[in-house]
Length: 201
Length: 226
Image 1: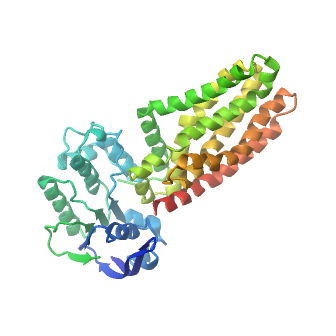
Image 2: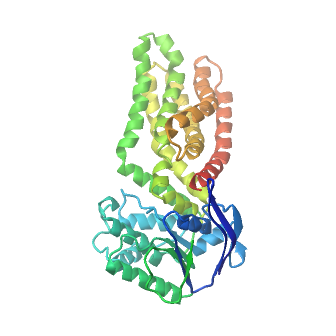
């Protein structure tokens, strides 16, 4: 369970949000909504532990995320705005390295399988430079299949995805929730999933 | 799927080496820069063998400093721009270890070629055989220092506009000890004195920077990522 208390975020002189409270139990999902520049990404970065909040605490299963960083990051899967994809490497190499740097070993077969599920069959060996924006997002989202985690934090996961890929992503989120995982995501669209809550900044 | 401790460090090295192999021009540029800078000195000074032998250690070492500086800006900048650094900071593995892997890869790509080609350039300065060996040894101990201290500078200037010039201003003064002891070892040998003292001090600088630089770079990177 993730619990956030009295969270305040300040960027320069501007206070983006203050005294934010919420709790996210296991097997639940939360959509964070708000206008452009409202601080959605800033909130996600604080939750992930990339930015220190001005005030407030973020607890994961009752433990401050800063105190047990390694445990927190083992349970967390963060897919940010930026792709973290290397243009010179192909999707397979990209995934192999990004999983490996997090200490997860995965076989090339498993990676091929995940890429196939996201409709990237036949493009495993093409440098990412030659992929479209939507295809790059698909490569990123195949990490959801490959890297075990309890909580997903997804920043605008539906951006640039076509109808089919959006459906695949929704199914993935559903499956993750069914297994007791939780999801926090930002989106400007309404999410075709039941049972979630929405936080507007 | 299981997690291992040494594997991510090795993987960070392998990843950067693979990326470097896909960008061969960058390695070749730094190496040619080294060759050309070192070659300009004899051309400018003239064919005075005694004088050339005297300035050789300093010339080669300054060439190595400048060549290292050339590639430093690209040590973290591409990974910062595409979000890889963010993912590394979020890895359950030690971020410091991953950063250390990147520094090792940087040395393998920019430092090691300089060490290997230095004796060939040393011949142009009429350095005797024993000094050539010593030059290689001093560079072998010294170029890792350049990568390590340089990484701290690269991390500190990450995301700063005009960071390149700032990086040089920040880092070159910190390279002075390595330059003095590294070039000094060869000079001492040429003068018939023992080089052991200089080499020991150079080794000490290496040990200290091995200990502090990955840690300091990681701290600076965390600040840059905020």
